[in-house]
Image (cartoon, rainbow, N blue to C red; front, side, top):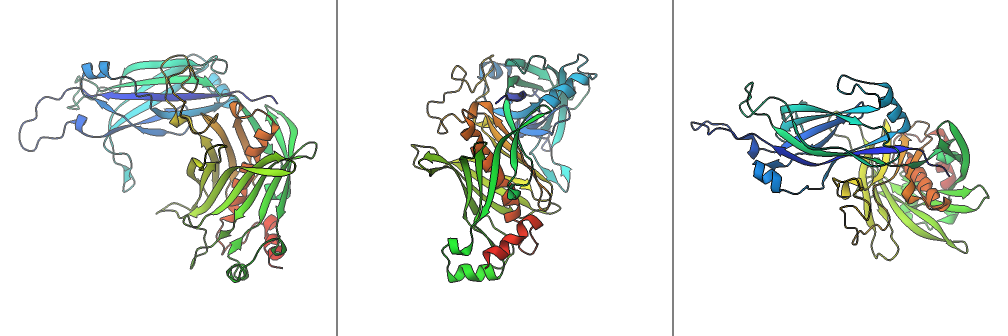
Length: 438
């Protein structure tokens, strides 16, 4: 299997230095900015803006003595297409081709909005040109040190001292295997490995649904089925090209509407087990996925909530890896990304390396570090053919990749399993209810 080139750009080690304000006179004097929380917004090219808190240092001496925090503030994942886009698009701040523009804006106040208006007060902005040439081949520190963030000082007067921001920007090769379902998971599709414009078959999927004769039933279950308030028994088995099963996603907890509602709640989620072959036809659990329908707030739609726990051999409890949401109407990305849990080094050695600044002797997730995988799924009611990206470091054999493919199928099917029970399932799944109720 040949991977696709990806690069991740990491921003961290933030510190904000504010100019010293003159003593204020009178009882109505304002609050010095250094006593207020600050945050920054970070954007790389056309990619989505990310927000992080900006720790304050109160003096030059404190800034010199304070060691790098190692905290990650933002991570941008660039595909080959993204790198080619930057290479074609020189800008005012990045006239050389292959360079990208990182924009940072510093705000005083707390993150969030009030009545639709940002609650922070802009202190200043800065732009950094990043040379991404060769980033696919070796890690590099693209920036490390202090930058001025505008000319607006404490008093907001022209010529007053500007705030300064210290940050480290690193680029690291992050090659990934890319897989694409050539049909919806419930249609038992092939899974293709993708590299550039080339696609080749890698796995096949077999969707199944256990009927009532396969399941133990109770009176309560029968009542829920009669009311159409339960979805259960789904499974996806992933086979290699020889026909051998190499991974399995099995719905082990039904997706049931909470009493008095037509939705699966967080307090009673449906669940899948992701299993891998253990030899002699047996299976062993590798991970557990729980999903539910998250109610949208004012002006926002519902979302699919998910939580994924890794079942690590030798560890007597499940290890949580992800807890997030995907927009139910638009779809989005399910992601397992442990980058934020790792320290960001200033040197040329990645923090996730044994030679880096991180101590992983007590790391509970074994070899799972950095970007693990992502799966792009469509919103409910849409034809969804998931695209799966898996970090090269997490694939040692075809069975490793198959486990992530099975997980992606479970996420995609959960979008349907968590659909409001007052709405009909897509036609590919609508026959399952009648089969289960026989």
